[in-house]
Image (cartoon, rainbow, N blue to C red):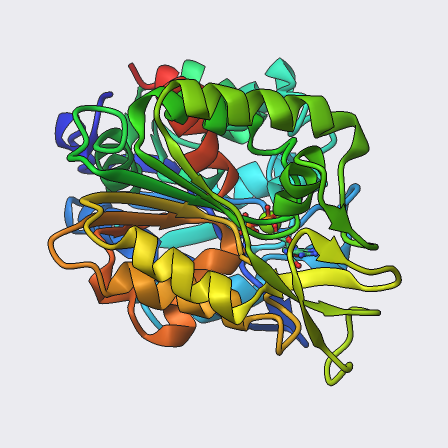
Length: 389
Ligand code: ADP
Ligand code: MG
């Protein structure tokens, strides 16, 4: 990848694709982590004498929608950088183009949500060309979006001299360690909603790893595939054969697979709902498994011991609704407690768990990309990386 070290930014207008897809409530940014993660790149370019034009998406708007405006992000960014202005026009528009013409070195313009442009997700070449005329060089630092072949990620990178930002580099370096000669034993912990989201990464990692831990809703597809009664728990009925096949392949490769032994179950997903503990393969209707149980928490922690490389993606339960956050927090604690291990966590809920525990420093790398980190581990590259090579 070409990196910032290959770019002399002096006197240039540099277009930077960042990932400011942050939670916003009542016009205020609730978590500034992604803004902070972008600062090393932005400060480096500003110190080098550039002016900056920032592009980002926020949420999943269908066309222009004030609910998804980046205006609150511009307000938050002002606390970190001296001269920030917000450009409230669609980022590919003539008005936006005119507004950034007058930028002086040291100044920063944050453009409105790229997903307000209908051509963004289609990677419309005409939109990419309108982005490209905004600047003289392009820096991709939105690792969390680097698996999307969108106009502001891939399209524009083909039209300007394009470079990886520092965050992008840091992510690729850390995740590459999970693919290239990882120290063994190597453990992978997967959770979250769906097996179908994780098939690719399981298939790619199975031949490299020693232990696989499966929690979250996706565990129930495996448990049912093994003949378990899982009550009303989420199951992907059309993936039962695939789950059996993955378990067979794991066995053939000598990978130890750890599934939940017990679960915390309830009749509904609601705070304060009455909960019961059941064996994971004997959950009666109308209960659904919503978190790994206390025995599983202990068993997972015990079986993680000694691991030298760990990758974790996805919550062990319905993390956003207490008390179903306990399994995820327990797994976070267990990984953080490993001595001398290189551990990587990716994915919204699992990263939130690590932050809530205050254990970020105990991880080798906390990835800003959920889907992007999974796709990188599956394919060894991403559309946003290929375009910088
Ligand atoms: P991440 O956001 O960490 O990448 P996913 O998007 O794959 O992870 O999955 C997160 C979702 O999975 C959460 O919304 C969580 O509520 C849900 N989930 C986890 N375990 C269960 C479960 N047992 N039953 C229902 N939903 C679950
Ligand atoms: Mg998610």
